[in-house]
Image (spheres, rainbow, N blue to C red):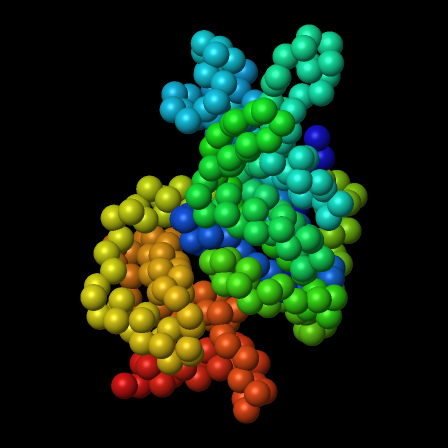
Length: 335
């Protein structure tokens, strides 16, 4: 298997890397939407983060990557005794995927040869406990996007078709990417993503040259390049592991929650998803920094990630969403 490009070796794109790390610390945040130019390392970053994480313990023989003792596995009879591990799943969902391939369907081979009704797991089952990446998500059919977001939010895939009734766990970090010039997602769907990132082609000459050098070094000697970045990867892995362990214990003072709600009211975000995402993202960021309490600094930093895609369009204000968020942050924190 070809080695993944190291996560810590990616030049720039700090906001995208931070959003992915926050989502990895607390998957309840609801995934990451990455809009921007082609060829800016979107899929490379997601694949690199999945490759960075340690193997996960799985029940031997399970087709759903279930953890040992997983109560909701639909096929506990397939679990063998013993211990096993597997790499963190990274599933790249193709644009042409059918609904059957995504959610799973009747196993036609067993139905025709043995006359048995059996379920063939789909891509959602393969993505369980890992990452599901969708490039050009704005070109994916709306009903599939709806389905994916529902499953990502509930952590469970329910299939009722062709005489089958199957429920299986499907907890994954959903990452979508796209180019706004090729079509936008409906606001209702954008709102379902936890975090949103804007990436642009690097404009610094030194950054572009460094990217070329690192890509060339990786292509020439993947193993040697990965070895060179081992220490940095281990440090990031330890940071993620500690953050995951402590995030549930991070406190969020009432004053921070009040500022989060005030921010959402100031920008006119509908519903309460904005507040929930701000709270969880600030808590995850504090955990990454080794803090026991989320504060204003964390809230300021995650506000653009959590709110820029929830803004209503204002025909009287043609400034970018990030500028509007920064303006709202300055207003709220100046009060």
